[in-house]
Structures are given as C-alpha cells and as structure tokens.
Amino acid sequence: MEPLTEPEHVVLLRETLRRFVADEMPRRLARQWDQRDEFPREVFARLASLGVMGLTVPEAYGGVGPDVVATMATIEELASRSMAICSPYIQSACYAGMNLAELGSEEQKRDLLPRVAAGEMMFAYGISEPDVGADVASVKTTARREGDAVVVNGAKRFCSGAAFSDYIYTLVRSGEADARYQNLTLLLVPPDAAGVTVEPQRALGLKGSATADVTFRDVRLPASSIMGGEKGWNAGWGMLVGPGLDVEKIEVAAMALGIARAAVEDAWEYSQQREQFGKPICTLQSIRHMLAEVKTRLEACRLVTYDAAARIDQGQEVGVATSMAKLFVSDSAVEIVLTCQRVLGAYGYVGDGDMERYVRDVLAMPIIGGSSAVQKNNICNRLKLPR
Ligand SMILES: Cc1cc2nc3c(=O)[nH]c(=O)nc-3n(C[C@H](O)[C@H](O)[C@H](O)COP(=O)(O)OP(=O)(O)OC[C@H]3O[C@@H](n4cnc5c(N)ncnc54)[C@H](O)[C@@H]3O)c2cc1C
Image 1: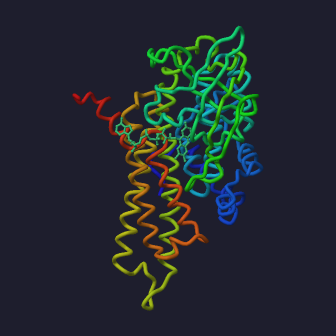
Image 2: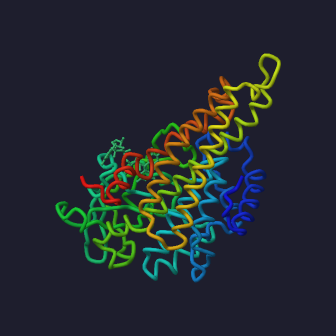
Image 3: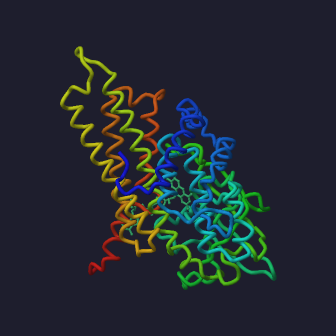
C-alpha cells in the first residue's frame, strides 16, 4: 500500500527501483555483501546509471533535483534489500549532493556536483570523534592556516565509508576552543591525502559501509578544501545545523522504514508457508495480531516520513517534523523488526535467512543521525517548552 499522496513520478521511480533491486540486488548477493562486509561498487555504478544520484543535484549542475520525496523513496527501496548499497547511496546523493548544492562555493558546485549526478562522488561524514558524540560542537580535531595551506590534526571515529569515499566531510576546530560555535569549519579531506590513516571498526550491522577510525597527522590541504570557499572558514556550525540536518534526520527514517518493510513482508509471507499443528501459523490469533500490529505501525512510519519529506520540498520549516519522524520511525522500526523476528521463531535468529540481518541493521537507527533522546530534546526545545 503506497501513501495516497505519492506523486506519479515517485510511483514510476519505485517501479524502476524494485526491478533494479530484484535483478541487481537479489537476496543471495545481499547476504554475501553482509557476510563479507563488502561494498559492491559495480552494482553501485549500475544504480548510478538510473540517474538517482542526480535527485539531489540541481539541473544547472547536471541533476534533476532537489527532490527530497524521491530521494527518500530511493533510500527506502534500497534499504529494503541491502544497506551495502543504501548507505553509499546516501553518502553520494545526500552527504555529497545535498551539502554541496546547499553549502558549496560556486567553484565546488561546478567541479563536484556533476560528478555526484554521475555517481562518481561520495562523501564520508567525519563529525564524531573518540570523545565527541552528541556534543558535536566540542570537536577537538584542529585546522590551522599556513600560508595557502590548511593543516589538519586529530582523530575521527565512526566515519562510515571513509575508505572508499572521495572526501571525508570533516568538522574541525579552526580557532580557540572557547569560542565553541564561532570557530568550526567543514573541510573536504581526501582519505588518500598524506597523513590520513583509515582503520576499519567492527560493527554489529550496516555491513558494507565499513565504519572507521580516521586519524589526521599534519595533513596539508589547499584552501580550496574549505567547504563553501573562504567564507566557510569558521562558519561550519551554521552549515552543519542548517537545512541539511533536517534531511539527514529523515534519511535515517527512510532507511529504518525500508528495513522494517522488508521484515514485515518476510514475516507476512513466512506466516502463510510455515505450518504447525496442521495449519499455517498465520491462522493463529497470536501471529495474526502481531502481523496486524506491524502493518499498522509500518503505515504510520511511512506517513510521518513522507509528510516530513514533502514539507522539505515545499520549503517549510521542518525542524520539529523531521525530529518527530526520526524519533518515531527509528524507534518503531526496531519494535516492528523484533516483532517480525518473533513471527519467524528460530528462523528469525539463525544466520542463513535475512531476518537476523534486519535486526542487526535496524538496531543502529535510533543511535545514528542524532539519538532518540537528542530528538526528544530538539522537539521540546524547538516548541519552546520552558527548561
Ligand atoms: C554504525 C554507525 C555508523 C556511524 N556513522 C557515522 C558517520 O559516518 N559519521 C559520524 O560522524 N558519526 C557516525 N556515527 C556516530 C553517530 O552519529 C553517533 O552515534 C553519534 O555521534 C552519537 O554519539 P554516541 O553514540 O557516542 O553517543 P553519546 O553522545 O556519547 O551519547 C550516549 C548516550 O547518552 C545520550 N545522550 C547524549 N547527549 C544527550 C542529551 N543532551 N540529552 C539526553 N541524552 C543524551 C544518548 O542518547 C546516548 O543514549 C555512526 C555510529 C554508528 C553506530
């Protein structure tokens, strides 16, 4: 069941993506990418040929966007099969495409956005650090100017896809720490620059997007690496918490929605095939109630995600709507997937099906992109509830 308001071009896009998922991302390969923690670059290249990377890129720079609803539909469809393709899609269309379109200098847009649209440009987010989680403005990685160069020192953690990205979108402290919000800068750091090391971290799920520890030792970059050009120096905070953050929140909602949808579809199907006591388990009231519940919650997740996305496309102020979507969908998706796992009984727990992968993947959703607690803070603060 699609939302009643789904625009015609998004319906067509979903049809194309479902064919792509069936042909190029069969379950067998999705399991293999997960088990090998592998990014299938050749499949990603074929995905790019559908033109979906350009959904975030304005026409003037070679894309067909920005179209947030279509971008979220793409994320949902890809996440319904494999995060090993979905996460790199987000790194390309969203991390690179949306940030460059919104915040890049004219030179950066002209140079990099056509490459995003062609599927040749990915950013990894270098925001978190060993001692820096939700309190992003306390980053300790530093950048200083030396003539025409910018010199970076420090460490980033949980930098997903750093090894195969073109740039690490790195938040640095570019002045004295006590200025807190006034001396942060975003830099584009190539992971193969001299002085950068990337060490993969082991994670429970989201395989294929290899999250990593990154260190910077006297990494020398040209001034053109400053996001937004020279006026971006010390202006990183405003860039980070701008409209891009709203899109980032619903990217996680769309991922969670896709994973939850896959779990519901599998549980629905399984319940009709698995027989116990001489009849399919879908005839048992306990199973029927679980399935009715997950279907209902899934529909609510879908509505809240695409409502927030449509509001962004309409240019509305969406700080509250996107926090609500991120909070509700990521927490609900965990409940949905865990309920679906119970429908499958033992087969939801063993490693040769897909359900145990959905469980591992969905558990990250309330953590990444601002935790559920942080979204609750945002909602109360933005609605001006006295503290
Ligand atoms: C698989 C994976 C991939 C990731 N990929 C990236 C990436 O590509 N780039 C990147 O920069 N980061 C990435 N992250 C990091 C992610 O964004 C962090 O989880 C996030 O920065 C929060 O940090 P933390 O999890 O260490 O939690 P902390 O901020 O240390 O919080 C710990 C606990 O305290 C709670 N808490 C913290 N502050 C508050 C508050 N003010 N009010 C109420 N409760 C609070 C949190 O909800 C949480 O329960 C990734 C993480 C994972 C697990």
